[in-house]
Length: 272
Image (cartoon, rainbow, N blue to C red; front, side, top):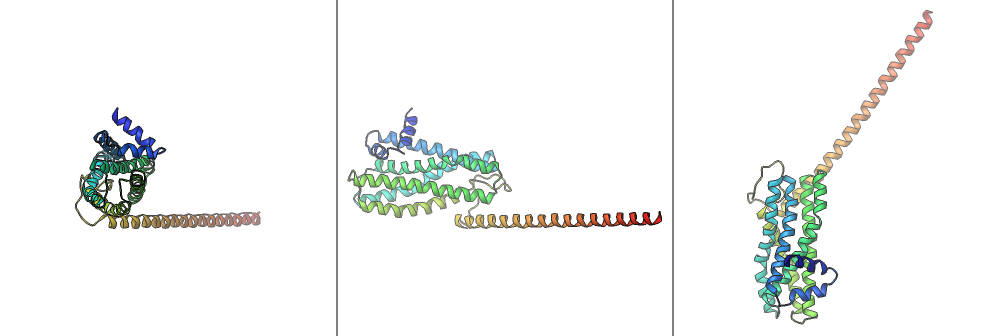
């Protein structure tokens, strides 16, 4: 019941942001709120992870469903301590649990955006999107979802600064720098936990050997997608050319047949 209430409160926050910020920073039942955040984050990220991995079958879908929640949890565990210590040095009066609740609310927003894109991902899986295209699609969705999530945290920190006077203004600017660190950690961690999608020509693997980096992979995916489009265009041009040549050949044969028939007819008339 508490989990359902947590979901309801979160969705109501879209229209009542200040009331939601008040609720997540209220010191009462803080542990329960954090557990609710973790539940929603884990549920939504599991669902999206399953959709990611279904590109390469059930096993990959289940594996990715486990790894996406693990990815978000590890990102928070790695990056949160440094952020909290720096904010405390800058004069933040937010407690550890309050700050954690704010950060988790942003990640819940991120996973909510992710799961809302699941039908679109399913559409491209059904219609046969290429591996390179699916890779870039997920990168774009994660980037968009991350931006919404971080914006949500910034708004909560501004609220605690302007309305509650328990958070320093400079802390908001420092958080923006922390977002950059968070992005690099998240990207490298995702690369270490790969595959999330799984190439169809490769056997199922829970983890892959550590080689290269995520940025090279994105560049290769863009190159593969462009090369595929170029190859398809060349094939279409070649097929069109072959059809035209065939039509010309058929037309020439018809003209020759007509000419032969005409000559035969003329000879028959002369004979008569």
